[in-house]
Image (cartoon, rainbow, N blue to C red; front, side):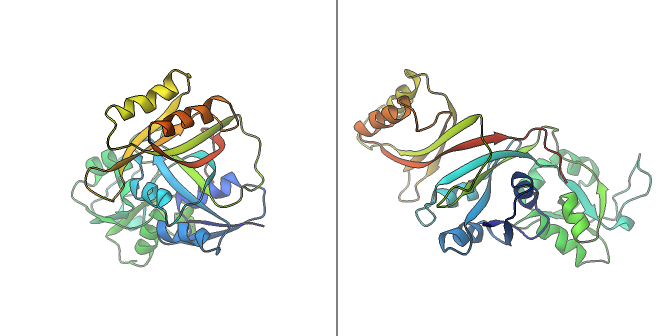
Length: 294
């Protein structure tokens, strides 16, 4: 039985996603308050694996999580990735919303609490129904729901999962309030050893590339190494190295396994021009676009 860390407390989308991914298997799922704690739990051996939400359809990359993933302090390989629907709901006390389902009244809600990513996913709903509510940012959706539970006098609501509402005995005041129906989050599994997984049709590889400072056109050369081999890049994003101003690395997702001839030769070509290449993992990729949220 594996010990798997996820961003808690109980009731987050991360918990829903990891329970779905490992459905039918006996593992221990352990919540941590901060993504840094999630990562370091596996680094120190408290857990065997960590689950990290890395990208969202609406809000793009979760940059704080990405920075922790690539930090030298963590330095754990990616073992798998999967996509899971992020269904957000307005959660609170029933007396703070009117009973008429056609024209709900949210005037009693003065404060909405959630993680910044979830709030960003629900901007249209908040603008229409709660334009004057104070937005309070916390480290996870479930933490926001828990804070609402601790304020039973009303006036506060949270954006979070139905699982969290059930866990903490609160009401779902409005269901599926995200701006777009195709709101999905990409999760990655990191750890030293890959657990037993179901077969996957797709395999991806992630690398970090740091360009040489004295090589004009180096990025073009990097992209050319993939292009002429017809290797597809599903994502390329620059992030600061934090070493000095103007110093960046490139985070690149590649739709090909390292167990091929083409990809290792492309990386060798990139290294030959003086680029630093760090392999983050070559791993199975799963898409659950029809997943049912429990």
